[in-house]
Length: 210
Image 1 (spheres, rainbow, N blue to C red):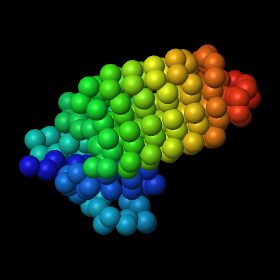
Image 2 (image 1 turned 90 degrees about the vertical axis):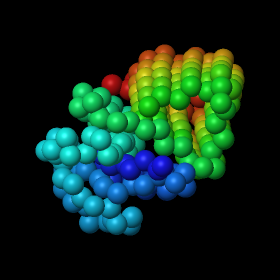
Image 3 (image 1 turned 180 degrees about the vertical axis):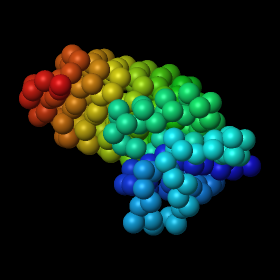
Image 4 (image 1 turned 120 degrees about the vertical axis):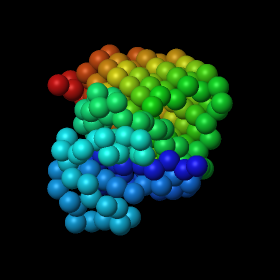
């Protein structure tokens, strides 16, 4: 039986989430936002703001998914889901390749053509975006975003709330701290502490991420 899903958030990232869900036979019917959106390409039904819902009407019938690209907003939405004791789901595009030996947290999204290899541990509320490669034994903490085409070689670890930019490459064994940003197209050859913004090939410090 397909899951019936209510999205928290409905804009650009949500479109990828819906496409992935539908590719796997799931049903996305409704969304929650502060206001009804003008652009509704999937013709979803607007339920209002999640904080104002009568949740008892939906608990037994629906899963809830935080469909927001921003790591901190996504965490806030997931805390709402957890505190409200709502059903959660992982959304994995049918074209993604995910090892049976990988551990994937709840409310995590794995996009079109992404690859997650054995003995990886992916936290909750993570985004593994289109075509990203997560090699063996990587550890990705909660609320991380790995952008399209990024490559994490074996045994890489990524701290909570960090962003790995599109088409960046992280050398095997490197550790990225919490709340750090790796710029698009970067090549990271050494560990990056918490709260840093780095970019380039090889990557260099740009500034602190406050």
